[in-house]
Image 1 (cartoon, one colour):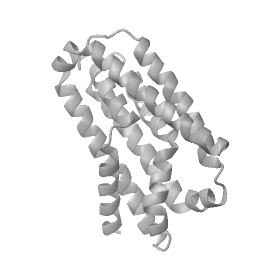
Image 2: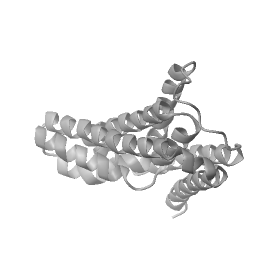
Image 3: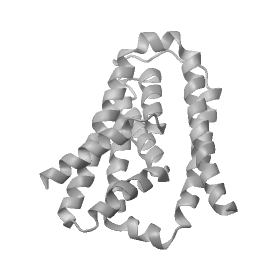
Length: 208
């Protein structure tokens, strides 16, 4: 079981490294709010990674093979959500970074950050498909407890990476403050790009 946990943890960390919606949201949150909320976004993304890994390993893999029409629907929904989020970032005015000592809304920030990180993964079907592709076939014949251990490891590995990104972004606030407008544009355009790509994937399926 420990072996599968370690494999899952490595997979969770490695798949989190490419720039994606959660990495971008963590950086944006660390700058606009504070480290605690950025960690909450990281935790939300990691929990959703673990959930998708559980679903992919234990149940969804066989279903996707039987119903290939499901992923395009999820891609379309994901694309719309990411485009809206990207537009909101592009339209927002750069704000000065908040102090870690501002505790009045920390509880609300935590839960909203957790929900944001969770939603960015849940509405991104490529995450689910990645766990199905990388782990689904290989995990098909393993014991159920080993599969669960791998999924938990994926969540832990994802959180370690996203948390690391949050800490780096928080430490670089002085640099980010000087580049606030550029940061807004880069983050917004990245999210728009991911959204358009997701909708394109759905359209390619429906038009082919």
